[in-house]
Length: 482
Image (cartoon, rainbow, N blue to C red; front, top):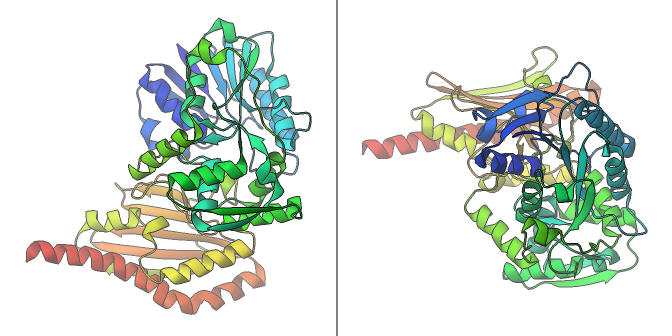
């Protein structure tokens, strides 16, 4: 059976792809950027890739012999003010292409939409569902509530709040009720529904066994982590103030904070059906879902994270448009040191950022992260998904990984902090020498003033960083020779 998957690099689709490959299906994966194909699947013998942007699908052909298709595209954190028409257009273009194939079932993951007062994003999801309906294929829609799992946006947001704030003064929407569902159960519904005719042309709410308020979810999370937390809700926080509160406390962008506040005001309770029995899914509890998520984190086995979506940063175009370092009109800080142990140095480079820090003057990096957050940037709180593994497209604090090639001994990062220009940071080993290069392309006078203002800090921040990388390598080498 041949299956088409959209949103391949997204949080849900990346995990789904691995499950389907393990079950022996032949996959065709749609990606906007061929440089962002996950390493785990790129060279698998049972998979092929199509470069396509469903907003602009010109001159793209989808193979006619597909049997099943997954529609897993959404724009929750999009910066576009007209995301509803954008999502509807994506759905319409997808439908037009799929109707030209022999596909007999499309599976769509949406949100629970049975409340009388829907948020803008849930209204958009419902409209996409209507757009996807077709006489040429059967549509199966699963409407999920809050998804809980390692790397999910809701999990990371709750973790940020609970682990950082022992006492919380929160907006009143924390008393809104919802039905969270574990990521493992969502994936179970998506995979078990393949070619099941009883789910054709139907929609189902999928949810966990408990109805919880967001406040209860925070407190339960604290119990699992062994943290005692006190929460006080205030009715005076407006949606905009609530968005700012969520933005400054957590690692999400302000656009996503606004979208979430809009959604969290709406009660999301699913309608019961026979879908659990039909697909043999017994959803686990919220506490079980959180405990399983931390098992993955402790094993450093998080497969995907919302942070690695390009829309969680500052640019939405392809990585390839930034991968070539500019030459003209740029300021550069280039440093180099001799390296005695290539593998050890590369390991240190691949572990940079996140909980590992930047090896020198970490307090200055943290200050820069706080400043970025104040001015509406992503800050340092995104961290990194894995402690020692990187691939193109990953978020790394306030950087985006453009290239991570251990064979070429090169790591290239693009800055996603607020800047009056564009910035790159590159590490590469050539022969027995480590080169560390910071490149800044200023925008106007403010960009040039910014560079000269931070240049004094470079002398010890960047110098300290490369010295730490080389010192670690040389120390390790010396230990081996003693």
